[in-house]
Image 1 (cartoon, rainbow, N blue to C red):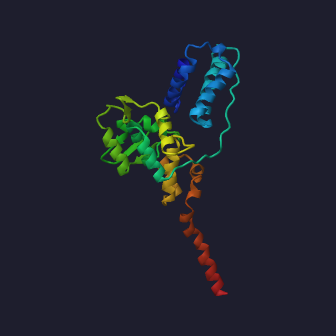
Image 2: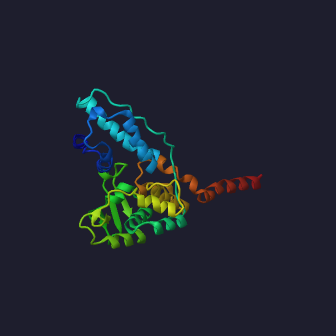
Image 3: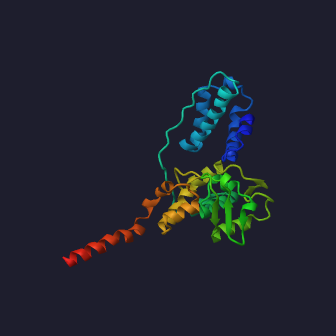
Length: 273
C-alpha cells in the first residue's frame, strides 16, 4: 500500500485513497499478498456495501484491485491477481431530501457532524472537499471559498459563494484548529459515514441516503427554486452539462413559461386565419 501511494501521489484523489486505505488496513494489515484470496476481497466489499452502498463498495474494491494489479504486472511480487467482482450500480442516482427532512437530520446529528452537514447543504461541496477544507481556502470578509483544480473531481477550480448559513458555520469553527476547518476533539475529521451518521438517519426516519446525497439535495433545492442549469454547473463545479441535466426534471414549473411561448405563437396564427 505504501509503495502504491508513493507512485500515485499525483492523483487528484490521493487524499481520498489514503482514507480508503486507512479503513482497509483493519482487514489487510500485515497480510502476505500471495495469500489474499478472491473470497477475502469479496468479504471486504460486502462489509463496505452493508454500511454504505454498492457504489461506495466498488470504490474500495477498485482500489484493492489496482494495488494487486501493480503488484503483479509491474512490481512482479505476485504471480496472479484474484478476480475482483464489482457490484451493479444504478445509473444517475439522484436522491435528495426535503428541507423538513434535512432539519430533522441536523437535529439528530452530533455537533461536529451537524456543522459539516449544514455546510455541505449550504455549499454543495463534495465530502472530501468539506472534510479536507483548510482555512487558507476561505475568505470570510469576501464571503468566498475555493477548491483548487487538483482537489476538485472535475479537474477545474471551484469558486464557492458563501451564504449566511455557511458563514455562520465557519465562524463557529474559528480557533479550533490552525489549519483545518472541521475537527472533532481537536483533530481533523477523516470519516463522515460513521455509526453516529447512520444512527442519525434512522432517528430522522430517512432511508437510502448517503453523505454524497447532501450534494444532490443542494442541487435539487436550487433547481426547484429557479437556479438555471448553467449557473448550477458553475456553482457545483461539474465538468459537463450532461452531469447537471439529471436535475432538470425537478423544475417543471420553471420550464412552463418557456413552453408558453408556443401558446402565444399559435394563438396569434389562429386569430389571423
